[in-house]
Image (cartoon, rainbow, N blue to C red; front, top):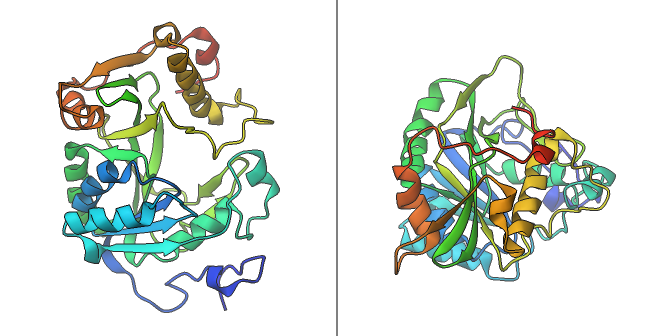
Length: 312
């Protein structure tokens, strides 16, 4: 019997955890991607992840841009084809916000069920949730590589700040250093660390008293493309962005609109970065610019309208 039967009665998308099926987990860290149409980002995203973790699990949710094929090609180039597993999840998943709230937690269309199904395929003792637009710096890759083995002697969750980079063109980008948003990305695998339904998205449980490790700033970029609709998976209508849990999403909307309107300086907190000739802006910021900045990274002041909604 599955641990979580899908509401629609499709056994291929029931959730069965390895510890209930009698399968032992092996030491290591698996990075889990849940992606849709991330082919553009993966050549930057995957190589430093392959260098950092023991296995990569990529779950493709209905991409039509060749995401899975690009992932396999990058893995081959990295000599990591044997450390990549690609799975297909063909069901439409409810968008964060009101759609998620209205979808039963055990439905194949629920973020909660989707995440539990994805992570039920992990076979290492630790897992790392990662997004298809997040680029590790070389420093970040090295830190995670060392940490992945050190974690085996403990039960800890690991959080790290990420810094949004809006790509205007190949040589120009705007980096947002105004918000220090910490999110746990790495968790032990086990029955105390599964996903439950929260108001606007899924939430990973963890027992009280678990050690929390916070990594330094400057290790992860979150890439946003100005020529793409980065917010198609979010429903804006009916979402109360004055809620402090959603200030980051509101900030992303405001940054995108300010850059499109040609007035990012008026928003505050943004740094314009220009790459040298022949170097892509993502490569420049992730491999050179961030590495050279003093720590902590400068936290620019926020406009008062947003500051009222932000809590440390």
